[in-house]
Length: 92
Image (cartoon, rainbow, N blue to C red; front, side):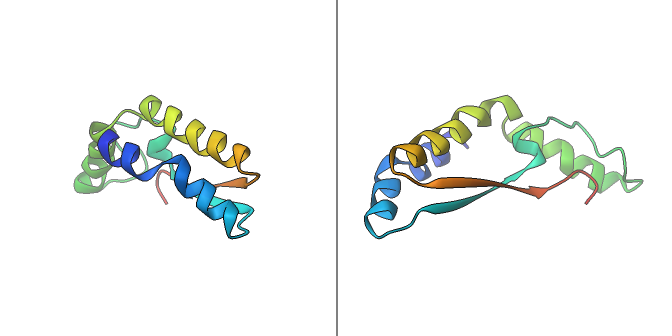
């Protein structure tokens, strides 16, 4: 996951967006980016509960914070506003 994030979140993309007039960016994040949940307490379906636990196995939520911060830093340097879009919630 970190290799993918390091490849996908690069300052040049923000510079390019700024150069063509983009000044607003939507950043969709899932709960697994900010909250570790070993299972889904709202689901009685075992496979659903395990699926949510697998998200935490990919990368702990704390490890996403530097990447989220990087988006905000690159955006600020390039006069781009960022809207956090809480894209997924547990049990949704």
